[in-house]
Length: 366
Image 1 (cartoon, rainbow, N blue to C red):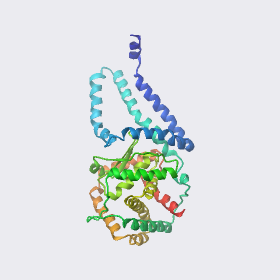
Image 2 (tube, rainbow, N blue to C red):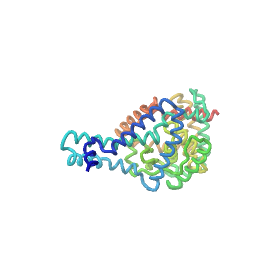
Image 3 (tube, one colour):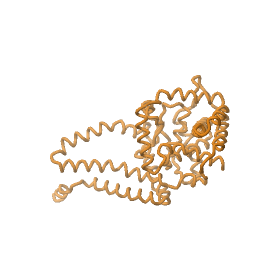
Image 4 (cartoon, rainbow, N blue to C red):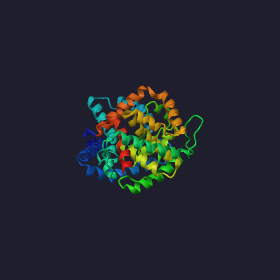
């Protein structure tokens, strides 16, 4: 009876107090990570790695994305929370505040999971330092030389790839087989670079991939479920690189440009010709786009070295993307993503995806 009276006098329930305490600890950890990259390195690999391993394996048995189901169900969950509050917790303003703070305590779990699993990765030492590279300002000639080298690699890999009548290359297996190839490739990369966490979990398809395409999002890592999700509506050649990118996040690489480059390292390390082709072509596009901005004549010169099949693939993609090019959903998605990146220390925002070019040039120069 006495315990019941104490519980009634307590403004917040025990679970809410515990969740707020965890969120406060997460905030302290995040602040220390911002101040000290050495701490961020340690925390992201050891503590974050353990949390990512656990969450990824807890959801790996599901053939579909739990995160996608939660997102789709979120409007219904919000309505249920509101209806429950109206019928059970609206007798007074104090009751309403207590209920609201209790709900917020549960939502604070998203912040806590972000910090403990993934967030400190935004403040680790830059990838070029950890790889022993020296990313510097690049000249037009260096852009041109790297684009030419990648074009040659794309052409060589394309000889082992089948192209359809629509101009697109054809991935000769399903997503499960692709996961096997990428997990094996990451085993090699993780053995070479110990700061990348080893993990035997792959990507999951997004059920609403076509709808997702209007946001221009090809994949997403959901840290609160540990799942790497890929948009399967996009052409085949984009899928291996996107999957490798989201798997890089899953293995602790938080910054977008760095995840792009680690994705390239993984595809380059693969024994599968289609995975290598997709990796070379996606990296070529990044470098070629930078070359287009710097010197269009040089861009045209490099483009003309590509095989007819590869040029056909690029033209087919441009035609495919027209249906999604002008989209309000994409504008909103880009604005949200740009803000997220800047909040977590990526000053360039969405442009940070293009910084992979500097890493690529430094890699090939070395």
